[in-house]
Image 1 (cartoon, one colour):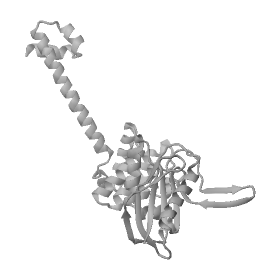
Image 2 (cartoon, rainbow, N blue to C red):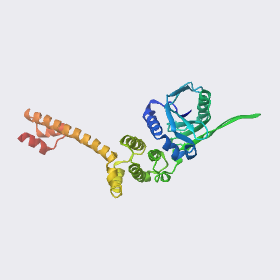
Image 3 (spheres, rainbow, N blue to C red):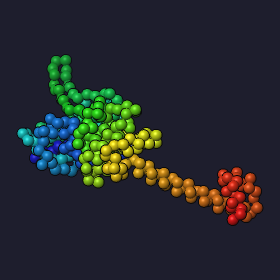
Length: 300
């Protein structure tokens, strides 16, 4: 048996939620993730033997910091055993020493497990920086060339994945390359994918929650999406999903509730001021209520 590892750098506190979403998604849909983005690796893995292991913690010798391998699972390959390292980069800016870090993680894992390793890095930042190789050379000799597989999500065309029945690909549409004008279309296709996959409620919420975190629509775009969804064959099924219309409705309902509470409070203040003999003009300035509302309270 050989460990597969999802390796992730220890994040700053403001990225904890971001990291957790990536971790949960890849851990839950590990087979789907490899199938969508690394099919050659997927075809070699025996997923019947996958077993999660405890978290691994290593010391970063370059930075003196602790690095945590959040997901480590054990598996075998169909033809040969291998450790797979998947590094999810949560930062929104490039790291020019990333390739060196990947080699360090590779070395630490190999030192512990002494098994073949297939390292994979997943870039989720906006910048175009990307390397898939680390070399160590001298003028008089070449010491090593370390290669690793990469997935740069922003370089992926979202349209290439909308015909798949893959929950990992569906969630990661939100991190792929699309323009501002395509956002409504991307979400519409995501919803179409989601209803066709018929996931259980927990997995559906995970996929939808991940997508919503990284692709958000403004009110105008939400209305446009709502109109387009109504014309889709899958409209009824889509409206059963706890999608953003529902969440937005809850927000609006809560806001209205607060507004109603404030309005009643203002009326109570105005009523008491009337009893004290304050003028309607003065009450208008203090409470912001209309003259008609105040006169109605006076009659009360």
